[in-house]
Length: 235
Ligand code: CTP
Ligand code: CA
Image 1 (cartoon, rainbow, N blue to C red):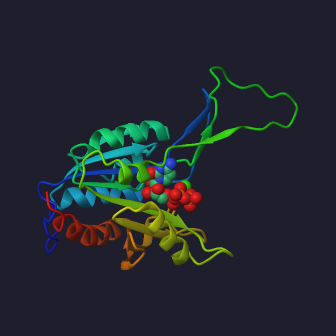
Image 2 (cartoon, protein in one colour):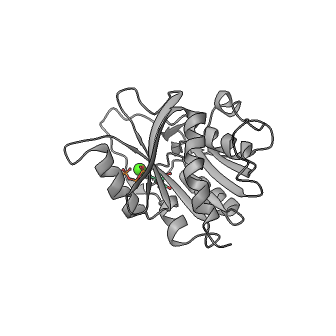
């Protein structure tokens, strides 16, 4: 599907998008998860395909209702945990011109996963968590294909330490991705909604664009900023 007036400016480009939220198992029936629906990542994958790209979507626990938003032709790789996501993203990224990390990857996972269902003991309990690998950071420091463009996401809230934009600027510099898409969450914004608002920053924390609208409109606005970065890169 080509929207009139929309450029086919990703023709021949290979794009990997991660979407959804990882689940880190505690035992065979329980996990640590998050509320990411995967809608913004699915919209990015769809928008990239509409602009001519060959798209792989690494989908962490994205529901069938959300995946139904994809036209045919997008290669969907389902994953559950952050470690599975890491391995599938890196494998697909070996051929990719652009990798977009829209997934909400758990920062911590249970240190151990029980083989059998955990039983209650009648006492309070604690779960030891260990940090997961930062997939985005690793794509920047150890790119599967050198020269590829890496786009990160940051769901932020303001707090006493600083505004939403302050946090996003600091994260952009810390992560070192070519672009960081910041979306403010909380107060009914972001997770689980059908519309979104984003600010796109470069690795220095400079604001390149802001956009709001449906997740598909926002996806196209993100590609509008990303395509020139890709085109400006020597192959
Ligand atoms: N990310 C990742 N691997 C992780 C955690 C996050 O690849 N283990 C990616 C996300 O996909 C997103 C970006 O990093 O593109 C930012 O995620 P975010 O949670 O906002 O940042 P963190 O660095 O994890 O910082 P914090 O959660 O403390 O704000
Ligand atoms: Ca995080």
